Image (cartoon, rainbow, N blue to C red):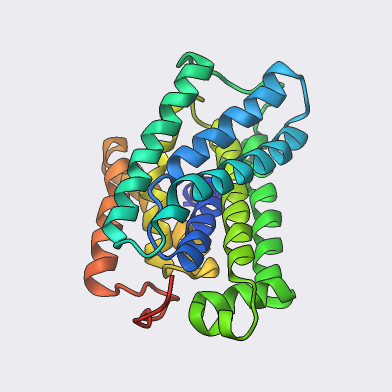
Length: 289
């Protein structure tokens, strides 16, 4: 059982940053951005470029990838979603799906669709009785925890975090009170993209790095955000932990083939039984996006 919990924690470390980024984008932009999986793939390839081509250490490569992915998300918001401000939610959702295909094929064009992997030294797992702890799992959990704690504390304690939460609650009132809404949206795009890029780095340590990498994580990321409470960063972390644990239980006691379906089931149950999520609250109507 301890091994199962440890594996679930490692899987949650991959999903949680992107789920928090997805929630931030939803809170400020007002729609479900299904391109989040493509942003994860961009982060994975940015990390590989710095690590595999330039020989940078993985931590420095991950930091560069977070910056690159944040700028890519900001550019996508300006080019694709900003002209659609005020459009129906379904139009924005379809546009995000189309954007994910565009980004995936741009990665195929740039990297020729070849499967890649990070340049990492081989290391034996740490063994404690029946418990095996791979060093890359410790690295993933540690980096994800530091990044998420920093974001959560920033949202709670720093002026930009309070302004962001105020704008997410009521965009029109925030604008009337003098909060720079457009700059907050841009900041949310960069921060959400940076977190998705971090998930790309962590995913690349466990999965093959190829342009379609993000599709394997799109449903778990969105399911985690909705299960925890859409727009709630702590809820997204909780949702990622629950989704990862459910996936590990399904793989252990049923079959690994059931793992991809866990996110769909969790998403359906959350929407049916508690649409606002575990830590969320019903969204007030009439907000100006």
